[in-house]
Length: 414
Image (tube, rainbow, N blue to C red):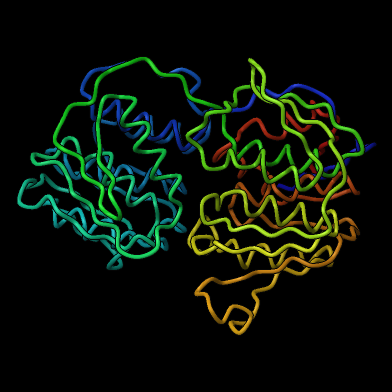
């Protein structure tokens, strides 16, 4: 299926109630399962990832299939490692290409019994009754996926001696680790974080009703619309000023593109507050999920962008570096890695966005990646665009296309 998307003008006006954060929802569900006492969770994400997590936590028998849901697979791996019995945890063909060895090795050190059923280091897994307690100190590469680290932290209070986790090297996606620890603290679990070591003593999660904040990553796609608009008067409900989400930095980032964010009782309001700056530079190490959005903003407005902190983008739902390069190229915008001599004194990799989007009814591939679909659709404000496999948005934002229609976009099945 392909959607053809267009808009008659470049004005954005309306109110959107954003979906609950997938990241917060999935962590809250695991905490509730580990708590042992049920409690209500309000405004849970309706994303496929979260719906899958709920289903798997309630499933009593048969293989547990996470589909494309990477967070779900990683959190379920750690959760099942503490459970009695035997479970098969599997996923989609793409999931079987996403490495899980770092997490499995760490869990095995703690006493988990996990076998690979196909390729060593990759899903699917057979997880059997553990012999937990033989070890409570771990070292893990800080540059690995924050989901591996969060998965270990979430189960830490339930370990007989807790967990002492040393992060070796440069920490990637620190806000996601902070989000995990913040949620754990909300449910009564204390921690110590000194230098590169996180210590969590054995303790019990405390059941407490909980409301999930809306998803700042989802908000990024509406910020693109605001950046591309001539006039904007947009209310996004459900977002909080004091957020656990690293992507909340969007409010600051988008001032560089002339967008003002005002906080109110229901969420945030977006309006124009000046012109875009001629160039943009940002380190996305703390907010990698909004890198695609900002690359499209730069390309759409013809603003040169210098991006760093993209280390994790190649191991997401797709290789997002390659995908951005291919799809931006369709509108004559380049996304390229700079040679190493550009940063002789740094280990950082730099990527540059150059050119202004020139549309000739492009058809954008989505690579089974929800963020590719939602980041590129706003280019319809400059002319007709086609989006292949538009249904991929169900992974995190099932109502995305309906929300675009509310804001005046015409969407038809091509």
